[in-house]
Every structure is written in C-alpha cells, then in structure tokens.
Length: 158
Image 1: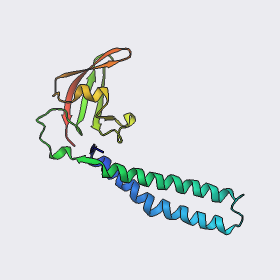
Image 2 (image 1 turned 60 degrees about the vertical axis):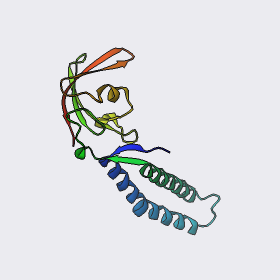
Image 3 (image 1 turned 135 degrees about the vertical axis):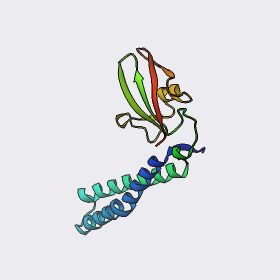
Image 4 (image 1 turned 30 degrees about the horizontal axis):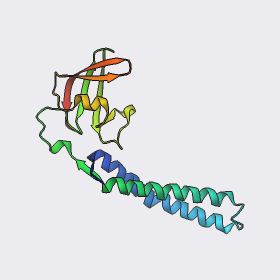
C-alpha cells in the first residue's frame, strides 16, 4: 500500500486516540466482561453481549488506527518552503465571490478531513482548485450549481 499524506496534527490526534483506547477503553471493557461473566449464564446475559460488542469495536478501531499510522506520510508544513503557494497542510483564507463570504480551510489528508472544522481533503475538488496557487490567485471549483470562484487572500503554514 502506498503512503497516505497526513499532517502532524492529524497524526498526533490519532496517537492520542490510540493511547486512550489502549490505556483506558480496552482495560475498562475487559473489566466489564469479567463482571458480566461473574453474573452467570452468558447466553441470556445482555451486559456480557454488550461488553463483547464494545470490545470488538475497540479492537477494530485500534487496528484501523495502527494501519493508518503505519501507512502515513507525515508532512510538517512548517518545515517546507513552498514560497507562498498553497500546498498540503497549508491554511488558506479565501473569498468566495458568488456568496460574498470569507472562509478559512486547511488542506489535510483524507482521514483528517472535517468540513465543520475547516479541514478539507487534499483530494477534494476545492483543494485541487487551490493547490499550487498563491495569494491573489483565483481558484475555480465546479459544483452542481455551476462554478465557484475563490480568491486566495492569505496562505499560512501552521
């Protein structure tokens, strides 16, 4: 499998979640299973089945995070010298001409993307329209309702 780009912040968030799952959630569910077993008949023990289901979820998430981190190419945008251009990891403030609104986005890996937090995937149409451009340039994105023009106001590397 090829390497997947990820920001330093995204990798840190995954590592924190992994530590919480391994250090807190996993031991808690093991304790819950032990307590449920102590209640006797496992066939009709809802607490036992719920704890086993939770254990399966936790173990699956641990494997998923381990896989993501093992295939991650962690990019520290603060150590790059992109010369003012929009690159992976950059934070971009844009003016959306059609809506008359300003928005701030950070271009991140697919697993980190969350539009509510202003994190857009590097493979999204919006990010592709902005990458390689500089302050003052206009990125054009095709959306179902037509074209969206976004003027780049600032580019930061945080």
